Image (cartoon, rainbow, N blue to C red; front, side, top):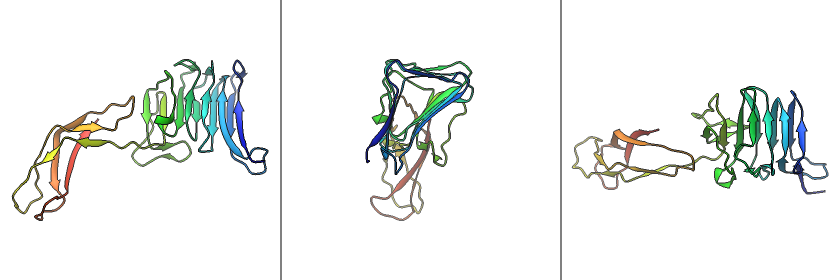
Length: 219
């Protein structure tokens, strides 16, 4: 029969695997009672390492009321890999306990669709997928708890102007204005540094509405 399969740990229930590993995964599958993978809702889990994954792009991972995920292992001790959204409905900003020096990583789609509650990590990363990895030029830190998104944000710079010039056979251009950076997501910061910036025309030909390329940096 068509339908959505879900995994739900009822409030107050728990899994205690001691020093073992807990893996919970929900996939689509033809021939099953429910053919589409739905959400996974977690309660209490205790183990050396914990891995939870949904594969359907409409299925979430949710921490249920009072959920507490405890891992005693090192490395990536807790990995929650949602194909869609992540919801922290545990009622606390600290639903993870790490006693073995490990860290937690949460993969999801778009941060705007998530509900983190008071949960915060040590870093955010974008353009990264649990299965496909990160796009060229993006990598994950080797330490720290992280919130990792497939979404790629777009930053915009306004407030910079280019002065008119008489034709001189060069691509030289003069820019002015400090510049304003917009498009940052909650929890992210960046500083636009225009002190070493340069401007150059796309070509040396005369004309109006010419394209000018700017170079600089932001951190």
